[in-house]
Length: 112
Image (tube, rainbow, N blue to C red):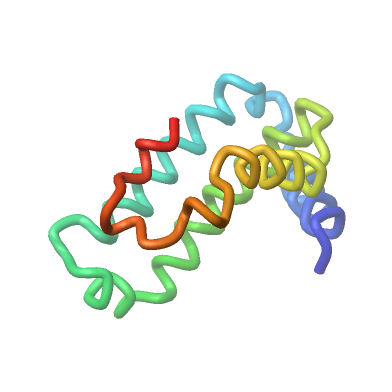
């Protein structure tokens, strides 16, 4: 399934329920944060290995984050592939491969 296929299915689901009226940019951004918190909660006080023992819950919460992110991008007329490619290109300049190895010695934030 492509990003466009996913977006079409998300919009169909939303439109069949007449939920478009509730999906403004502010509320979608809030929903992304809330769903990301639910995803994070699955890892709270656990090791990664322990959290991964509930793959269905992880899939559900990650899907919720992605669905709201897709809807926000759609509302803003942003192409998901384009904005990801642009961000990766920007990060490639900011964090060149030659200086990004062995980060145990250097904190990730020291690149800023």
